[in-house]
Amino acid sequence: MARRPLPRILSNGSAQLARSRELARTAADSATDVLHPLITITRGLRRLAAAGRRRWAETPKERRGALLFLVASVVLVVALVPYGPLLAAITLMAAAAWQGRDRSPTASDGPDESQSLRLKSLYEALVPYFSAAEDPEPLYSHGGAWDKAFPTYAFDGGGRISQLVVRYPAYFTDGEAEARARIEHLLAAKSGRGREYHFTWDEEGNQLTVGVLPPLPVDIAAQRFVTTPGETVLGFTDSTRVQRTLPLTHGEKQRDVPPVVWRTGLRSTEPHLLALGQPGSGTSTLLRSIALQALQYGDVVIVDGGGTGEYACLTGRDGVLAVEAGLAGVTASLEWAATETERRLIAANQAHQAGDPPPDDTKRPLWILLDRPTAFTHLAATDGRKDPQLLLQVPLRHGRPANVTVVVADQLDSMDALSEPVRRHTRARVVLGPATADQLESVLGAPPHTTPIDELPPGRGYARLGNGPVHRLQVPATPNPYDDATPDALCEAVLDLLPPRTTPADGETIPEQDQAEAEPDRAPAEEEPESVPVTAEAPESRPDAAPALAEEPLPNPVPVLTKEK
Image (cartoon, rainbow, N blue to C red; front, top):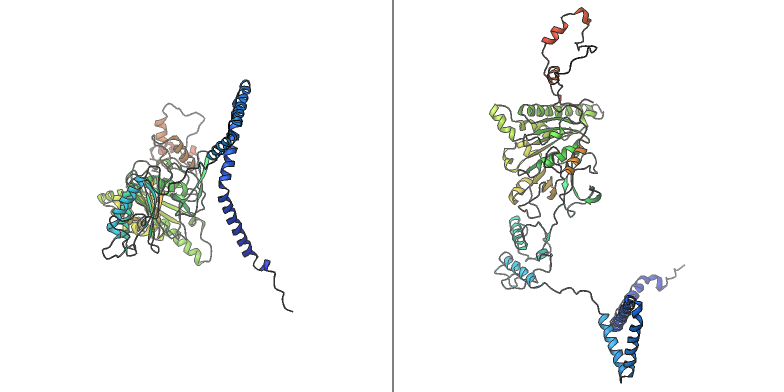
């Protein structure tokens, strides 16, 4: 049986509806254009009536009679004058048309004189770079039209360029980094210094988009970030480069900020981090922020090469195995870290061969944080000892399968003093503080897409994780809470994140002789027995036990690096 065709209204109904909608829209626009004078006069009459009602309401009651008599007199005079009603109607229509006009400010079609001069000077500055003698129709020429080269532009309140689209000829070598750097430097200098510009090169369309980046927030204090185990927040960046945001608490308000998240663990491709910067740029702040986040799930060993007590607040805390500032302690801690890495590898390998899961003591992350390790290189060479940086070779090379993470922070001028394993195995890089474009490229491995500036707040810089893009970075404010110059709000924020103190500050017990010297006025009670060593015999059978105990020196306590459960 043959199928009956569908009605035309069902077969092509969508096309007819679209066509009808377009016709209705066209008719409405035409009617609006024709009736625009009537609409304007009606709007004006409504505004005049509203003004009359307001005037009548504002007039006191004792004066309303006089006002009404005055209006009636004017109406009577107009009615008696020849052509009075006609002139009154014309006057009323003119007043209504004036009151009903569109009062919205009209946008200017083009830039003003100062903006045109700025764009003209920028165009003339680009002529030597974007012109060629053999070009028959040059886009850039001295005395040419700048409006063809700059199809889109915008200015801020101060009259400086905030956004610009630059067209350039196809023969410009936009694939070379040096050619791009020259153009970016020129545009940043001509558009206004002291701001960070973001450059987007469209090689297919031969266009360069220049935008001004807003400053990163510097008022974010240390807090618990919404992350999973193995994720560490290095800082915060622009929303254009990151697809993720974190909810943060700022006083009584909450806001979402895009973070720079560094992932560590067994599946990480960047298991270790290197942070460089100028003095006072915030590298110690970055290490404290990482330490507070790492103590949530793991243990931490800290090496303080500065010797200024920046990490004294972490001494004796739960999960902090050691905070060393001396050469002997640093060497012992790093030797233990290398041995612990080997032990974890052997234990995990034996478990894998037996078909069992790895032991629990190999799953807990171990963090080794080193602040200015190059300071101990000279001390070790002077004393004839081994460079402590060489002890990092095992944790750096085999730390990823053993859940051992190494973070090294040093000054930018001391990069040549870092050992070869440190420079080779730290694929996550951070540069804080002022730095030139060559220094950023040498450390990060790629130039940033923004222009570096000279004056930066503490904790401000750039970060790159492996082969990823270069991000602008602002480290959360994590100052030393024991510093008197630190605001109270920031100190309380850091102190709230610290784990409880489980051991004395020096990791040792207090000898009895020191207690007796510290408390000379306190006499022992008669009923309090003296502490004697535990032996198999009774105290009465050994009368010489007390003299022997007094003559025997107390042993020196040895700090233990392993954490007992």
